[in-house]
Amino acid sequence: MSWNKVEGNWNQFKGKVKEKWGELTDDELDQIAGKRDILIGKIQEKYGIAEDEAEKRIKEFEKELS
Image (cartoon, rainbow, N blue to C red; front, side, top):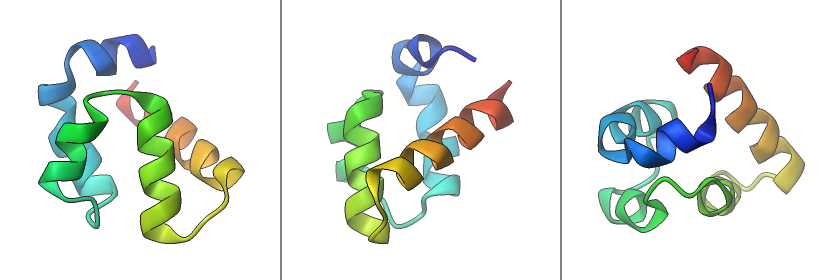
């Protein structure tokens, strides 16, 4: 699935993101607003992982959405 679809329908996908990364707050989800790079940064920060690992997890998430 294209991330553009996620970004364009962020309110629909926000719940799925919250399920996957439950430590993200509602305020953080609002800040992310579907922006992939911001989501990667928030995942790194909350889970204490490297950027490449966050990227890997986002790619897995995208596959789950397909």
